[in-house]
Length: 309
Image (cartoon, rainbow, N blue to C red; front, side, top):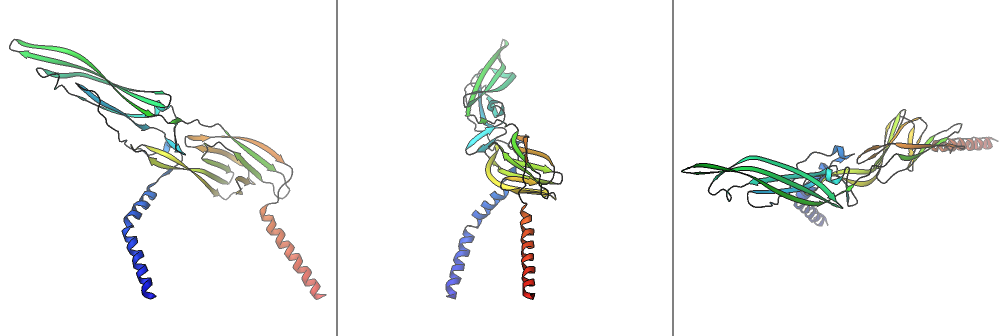
């Protein structure tokens, strides 16, 4: 039996050693994933263009929409904040080749002007790269030299699918229930939020509670453009020593509320708070413990009195 266990241990150790590099790579990837709150926190990165040369003759060039700024993704749908055409990241390049056009003359560039524009049609964004080349050909013979001035134009295009333009929601609806009990008079906040909301923040005089509805993980496209990948979570964080807590999806506090706001991947939005005066106060959860102790104590005293009599 002892030898069988040793064989099993050796097999487990061998499997671990064979897969050690794979595990290391997995955990390295996990440790390197960054979490951000908004697109303003996305890291800078150099994009990797897909270079496809176009044109022929003197001017050849390429243009590539490598991605979009301020990207977020949720449930397979990609968003950007501004219009996709204005958020497009475009890279370009060109070459000037006089070899085929200046076989019997000397050519030199006078001026090169370039411009890049983008526009959108339906769900497509098109980038237009325009080049204006001014050059001179100089022919020389035994009788002297002549120069000829030319202007050449070239246009290059790239078309990509446009992300959806994100619409920032307005102020979110909050119900503030004010209980007016003699012993316990809490303020209870309940929320009705847009699907675009990622965080809820409540601040009182001495404490803060944050409810995280979605986490924003930093990922990269295949052209190395960063974006926020939103994933549903349900996490509460409490700071400070104030009398503030949670019950289900509501915030409960005995202190004055100083601020309520919400976060989206594209910034902060406020709250429209509707107050409701409540006539009856529900018993504070801590009171049940006091009541239990009192009842047990009274029962024990009654028991002792009966024993003595």
